[in-house]
Length: 614
Image 1 (cartoon, rainbow, N blue to C red):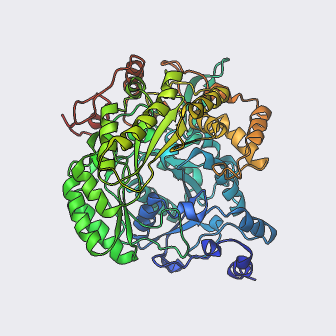
Image 2 (cartoon, one colour):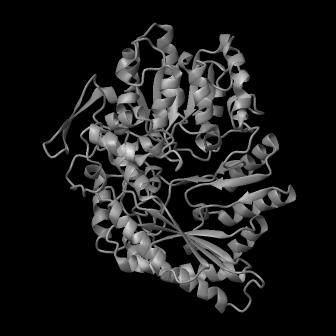
Image 3 (cartoon, rainbow, N blue to C red):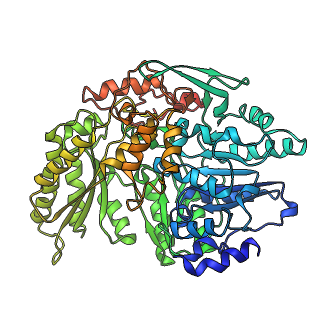
């Protein structure tokens, strides 16, 4: 019985069998004899999550645009199908060819979230690939690589990967595959390839770097081998308006999380919120022109048949030509009866004219990120949003016919006090009172103010990378305080599990010693840790104890400014001096203007030879 027959035999025994069969409209199948390099693009979560990821769509099409390269998709099987795979000796396979992943040249993972780390190990094990890089043969095959936002600190994963791609992948992926193809033809070994790859800007080969540790557990220094660079610089796309973008997407048979066309309108962020990793690691700020955005939207809608489009960015309303962009898009989408989704709106540039455009394309509630419950705390985190702007935005929304507003906040932020927590409830109450004060408010509808409160997780490459996270007990106390402070049933509060946030902080800020903890936790049954029904925090704590690691050392300890951090040898173009300066400014409750108002000296534009806005 071949692999296809084995798979088909058991499909009716699992939920959503269409996750595992391939063959979707838009998927790319090639003749193996004409392919030089095969790339298995692995997403360490279920099909429903992974197929929503815009980065996979871009790189899948980009690699397949080369005739001699074949990129195929692979996702983490859910528990029901994994059980069948193990019982029936079905290895992890790629959807286009149904070939085992272990037969591919590259096995590439996109690391979007720290709590997917155990899934990587589980997928490698299902594939029959040695989990530790040191255990793989010296043959030039099965090169296990990773990219994505989490690899800005790859050290907790360093023992499992042959190399990491730092920054944006559109150019460096093809360069890497070209070098591999050439060296493969000449019979090169794995080590010879890794030495060559380490010289490509944006490629980090962890086996060429070794760390020492002090008695207190902090890093004492780093030794570099094989002539690898002392500092590895991330890659960026300089011509973002002209960068490759797919003309087609794979259209799933089953519903996925974001079942629509996604069009990237900008990269980077001008804001500089001090907690936000994405706002710094995706710098510099770059936009596509309204013409490019319109053409990509129209092309994708026509080729896929989707009737919904989402504009992807960190802050869509910061696009310098948003009015022209939306006017062109709405003219097209309204005429074709296509729904246009506009996430990532800011309260400080929300206007009546923008609302009028939004009302043509979206009828649900509006979502805004206030982040802090008091003005003092919003200044600390550099949100650069005033209460007046928040209230004015809500007034515009209510007068424009909306009765529900969702507000995002964070809990456990640096310098936070109980007054800031109570301030969240008080701000929500003032917004509710505002609704009732408006004469021309929506009639016949009850208002709903939703408060979503995430736990602050200090992340690398942010001004708050030095900050400790609140302890579990303190976060739970603050969560109760917030609930007790809400006085109306029309205000709904939700918040994150503090245990999940603690683990996220450890994995985000960890060093190479965390590799053994991840491996131990996986061996003890941890996987799909971002799913509440699968999360086993008690097992993770046992894994930390077995490995002699105190999670508080990484999550709840303030880092010294002169301490060597696990990611200091990686250059994401924003200087450490800038982060230190911004951290000190935060503790003075002083804000830094956004990039269009004044250059804050982060260094990223200078590093890539670009001019700042001002």
